[in-house]
Image (cartoon, rainbow, N blue to C red):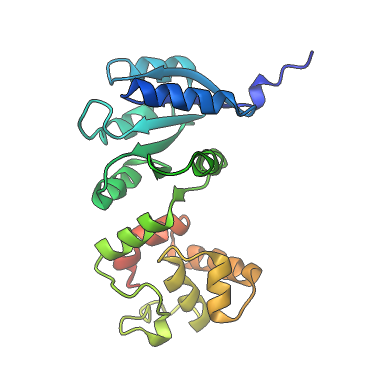
Length: 225
């Protein structure tokens, strides 16, 4: 029989509440593409488990020991550089989520989200992309002091005109993308196709020296958007 275990997304669950761990394990075991390799309810053995199992994804409770554990994110990635960390949060604090992303987490998902969204987030992060939900993107933008998320540069008092390398259309696309607006919705706002928006974004990322949408969002204020 062919061994397909290598195709599974191998998950290390770091969650302080037993009932939540049971629920997560039940959920993951119902998905044929997931495999829970280990779990822990505290910080004492997380580095040993990470080193032993080198999981594809670490689901990290941000309050694993009843306090914020952001310092563990870069250390876990040092132990297992190829692992992706998805922060699992019950904290209604956008600054904490922003700090988790800056520390190296590939995504943040709230514990009150649906199981379907959690599964989607895991697949997204495993694929090498970043996961932040729309609410978090909006909060990140507001935290950076930008109160008008729906206005393109041509209608905004603070356009990205400092970027001479960007065309007018690229500036519009970059401005809206930095607010977390999807490529499809940007296309609808600007009257262009989703594919054209994605092509513009590729050029924007290259010209601005950012790694992708999350990096653009995190650096939006610095970049002048």
